[in-house]
Image (cartoon, rainbow, N blue to C red; front, side, top):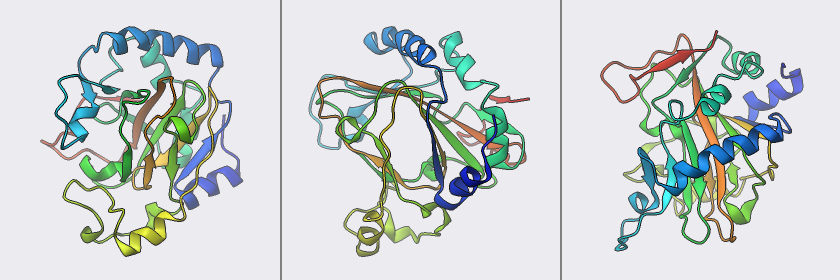
Length: 245
């Protein structure tokens, strides 16, 4: 499959692109089923909501994501190396794609009532590569909408060189910065259905509300880099990778 010219232009212009009905719904169900044991048993490595809550005094742990999922189940690996999406990844990167397992490589959750808000941010904040030619692939394993933590994006934000004072010391985009407030007003969203994917650039600002429904939202996300965009040595990005031939 290839993107048409309109889709490719939209990705490069907006910094993200929704592709409807990309993944088979049966595959999504199988991925979700395989995820459930890891979620239920909190199989490490994981990331918790409590890591993001400065004033949390709770002794319980609420799952935020399963990390390093490439090596957990064959079905996860199969999705991350899916041959149908490779031509699309090469289009948006403008070169061969390399699966970087240091970042994302995750099953993302928004647990009902217990999830936290994901603040506005760029994914590149903790990444260390020679340039910013990185794209993430988000797979909706079920329906996603604002009430259960749907991703929202700020179009064209990947083209802006922001000054450091527009972020806090954890590199979250400041909600109360006057310039930021005007930009955040431009945020958009598209409800996702099972099997939809979203491609987004590593500099595109995005956020998600907490899940206020009674059902967990579970999604799959991984990241690829352009083959010429090397990770910097001796950083967290310098990790196992898979070239998508």
